[in-house]
Length: 386
Ligand SMILES: Cc1cc2nc3c(=O)[nH]c(=O)nc-3n(C[C@H](O)[C@H](O)[C@H](O)COP(=O)(O)OP(=O)(O)OC[C@H]3O[C@@H](n4cnc5c(N)ncnc54)[C@H](O)[C@@H]3O)c2cc1C
Image (cartoon, rainbow, N blue to C red; front, side):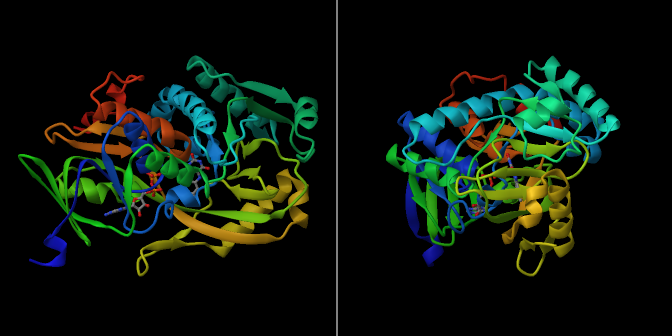
């Protein structure tokens, strides 16, 4: 019997993946007295959850309208109430958890430089208001009064007061510590290699040994299709390699999450005063390492757009750039027990999975308890693809 065949551990719920989704699921499940074990092939928060731009979104991002089909845009539109709930959930966590993860909900501004972009925002606002989202268009004077750091090129902005930001290097780790304090266990550097079902549950073979579990939650981020594939389940998702950049600290001026109605841009200021600049500029996947790397052209373009919108950026040095893999669905999360595979749960957020992380974890934990979800989950079931 090899090392990998020895029984390493046993648990009720095995959560595969120590990103924001896995840690949030563990937190909410353990908090109600559930027994769970999180495993991660590397360390916690090393993939998308630690590499994102920390934007807490509510309003529809303009890139959705450029990149996606009308069906996906409609799905994102219908998911907006979940984004509102996501913001409330992060606020509750800020009050509940011991660690500060620099949450700030001072509103988001989608800025426009042309009349055409203003018209686009007005149409977008109609869609958002239909879903009960609190948004308004501000004129140039209102924008300058609210955000004097923005360029005078900005003629209007769509403002959503429920948007915000957090520090992605801290937030998932705060959830993980909360989960451990509630009784969840975590095994780092433990990679799931295969998964088999028997009449007692699952035999999860890892590079450290076998873990026996009654149920399994697939929260492996971009590797969720590979884990689902171990069960013979096809998880229809796409990937996008994107990058982010951070500047040296500057005097604290940017309270908002800022985006653009037509260009690829988000920026915000984190606790130390650094500006975190992103928005989804492409990075390149390296098949040799299995990780994406940043593209110089994307750094330059991202900075050019940022300088145009906030002139102060021209005076700041960049201190770090990084890339990550973002997983995209058909516009909705894929959540819950897979039909025909009792005990196997998928936990896949739509894009903007950092925003949706805790609310997704809470919904999955509720499903593990077999409780009535606080949200109508029928639209998020994998059954929609069958
Ligand atoms: C550059 C970038 C910027 C982004 N910006 C934002 C933003 O501003 N706002 C926002 O809301 N969202 C943003 N996102 C999206 C967001 O980061 C992700 O949707 C979210 O973090 C996904 O969390 P997750 O827990 O599902 O996945 P991950 O954080 O990727 O975690 C999955 C974990 O599973 C582990 N794992 C995988 N396979 C195995 C295995 N076989 N065995 C054990 N463990 C395994 C991995 O090691 C990893 O730690 C961004 C993404 C990127 C890449």
